[in-house]
Image 1 (cartoon, rainbow, N blue to C red):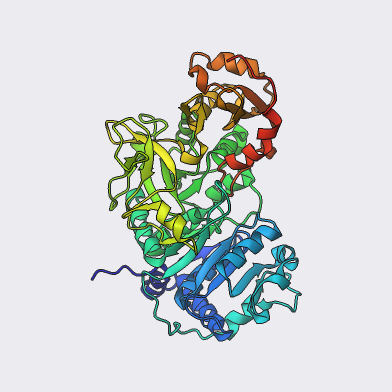
Image 2: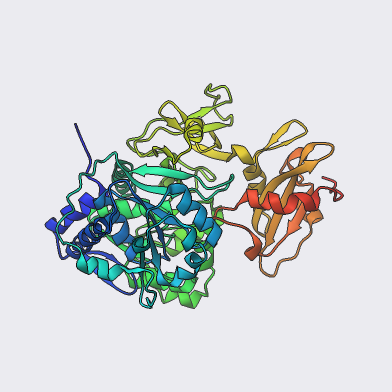
Length: 527
């Protein structure tokens, strides 16, 4: 029986093969593979020493920092299950996740203690199972992270961890309702890490810059890829996005890879020419656009500035892992596509509501078949059953496949608008309206309409210094969209008011909650 090593087991093996090789770092400190392995052994043993057992869940609340790399690996070695909590959440949202997963311990960064203070007494966690790390710890209610590590044994924990055991419960961003805990096994991450490294051409001497939140599955996927092949992960630990600082970091650290959302690229490329000229980005060999589609002009600008780099786009989810990849030679010839299947995966199926495969170029619900699929939703057997058809997994996205086998997202099934009996896919409308020169960002939602059942409503962020009107945008798209697809109402908002997940995805559900009542009785546009 072929069994892949877990990511924590790979870390231990690289500590033997090249112990003094740089493994992980942030702006404050760095660890070789030997130290990464030793410190995670100590932490794993120390957590067992305070009463945690295999299968217990451990919540983690922190900004991006090197401690994430230690915590993930230590929990994996101890057979414990990591439950990363998004640092952008408010106290009650944090409480929901910690209670829902039944966490028996909580590791918190000192700068985020105020998020926990108001809910701490209501959590079913023993007092000595609250752990804090950071440079300003002065709270006796928390165990010291560094003291635990110092007290723990440096030998490997005496715990049998199987590849099929859970490693993490990743709570979804809640684009369609309350967050659900997606259970991800060790083998799902080790297999995905190796496939990513193969398909994207990662090398063991590379440094990957982890910019996306470490509480999010994107960074965990790529952390796994670099740990599996013995590369180095640099955790980008700046708390707010600064395009110039990020660009300088890419250059100064000699990073070979990073994964960013389109907004990150747009803001970096929008920096003054002099700033960009002073940054040597020649070491950057691989770039990924994730979480949202990028326009042609953005792709061209990325490829021109990062001249030594190959550009990839990926489609995936917390549940399914990475499903498709648009490769470098396909970026401009298949604009709008999410690519084709990864190596070592099965063929994607596009199904109608009865479970029958749809014809070519017709939209259907996307079901993937990968070895890195999740094991189900925590304590939600019905939701788990709804996500699968046999070995095939769906998160509700609609897509079509062209005659060359390239996939194009149409929309989330739950976002689809039915207007006058016609199906309207917001992403199609967003793509057209987003090409207007005055539009920086766009989200399209359905709102109740007395005549049509639902009508198309556009929420628009304009480019800095641009001015336009709803009527002008309607005129502009008149020859580009069928009448029933054109917005009948508009809202113009600043960028800061566009609700997003931690990875930049627009929260259409939140927009519907905000805008439905405002436009329900408003007069419509002539479209």
